[in-house]
Amino acid sequence: MFTDSRARSEEAASSEVFGASALSAPSPAWGWVQAVLLALGGGVLAALFWLPSVGLHAVWNVLIPAAPLLFVFFPGLWRNICPMATFALLPRKLGFSSRRRMAAWTNRALRWAGLAALLLIVPLRHVVLDISGPATALLLVTAASLAFLLGYVFDWKSGWCSGLCPVQPVELLYGRRPLASFQNPRCAACVNCTQACNDSDPERARSAMGKSGMRPINLLTAGFPGFVWAWFQVPNFRPEYDRLAHTLMAFGLPLLGFLISALLFILVRSRLLPSHRDVLVRVFATAAVVTYYWYRLPFLVGFSPVAPDGMLVDLTQLLPVWTPFAMRALTSTVLVMWLLPPSRSPRHWLVRPPYSQDHVVVTADLSSGRARR
Image 1: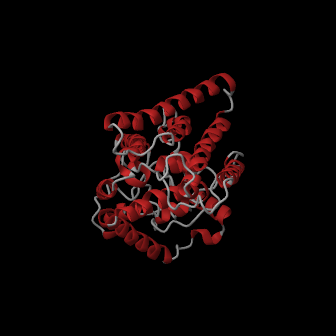
Image 2: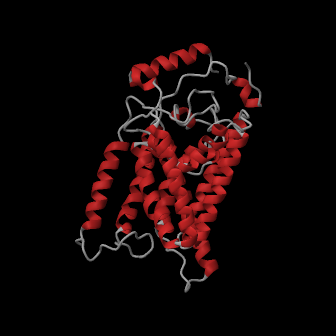
Image 3: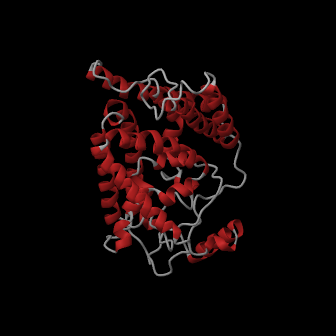
């Protein structure tokens, strides 16, 4: 449980690691950046309805391809500026959130639901999301509504950012060795809104299921490389395709890849590396993001067997034919060299702010839905 002594020790540790300025008040510029990005998000949403090609490019060919690199090197930066997080925290910031303390079982259930949503939304891109602006807009509106509702019911980031958000499992998977930590402009003081804070203790968040039982991050780590590879083998839907057959392939092939990858993980762990789980986790996490950029970067500039799927701009007539090989060699080398070695001094994504002195603290009773002052 959290106690005053632990709070003081963690704050002292943060000062030692990040320097005295780490615990100072975050810059007001963060608020302006969040507001601007929230407004841009509204613009993208409008474009998805009235200029769908612009909106689709902004979401699927600009934001999403950039996101994994942010998760790898600067997960704290992404957590500070994510427009969906800004929207989720509006009820708390505006003072009408119920601020309900989340029980441990609720957090586990939301994390599992977030992983399930991720594995359903990604294949849905080939079926409809990548080709329909209104469908993508509906997805974003639904996600924003859920984020707002969870922000209204639960305290601070516990409902969405560290719960149901389908992106946060990937943040945990890739954000194992951040290049830098950032101040936390969203939380003026830590109120222990969740037992497993992704921002200030991502290692603990990866163990959100406790000491026993399958955890969402474990399952994602094992299956995601095969899922990502198989997803790139499926083209977007076209009028000449049979709708049912394409839908079955769009969902079935990535899930089959996920299953094969997970079985491979289990086999290697049990037979070859039973005492080196951390090494295997780093290998599979690295394989997932390397596989993503192996395909995604060439696709963005037109080097794709399924073009114009996933293409931002066609540069095939301007770039040499070896461009895809250079892209793959560069990104693979950088990602492998950064993610594969063990992290000797784990760095938090965000510096934990000082603990609130007048707030209910989290104890072991939280697992049964109770809290103690």
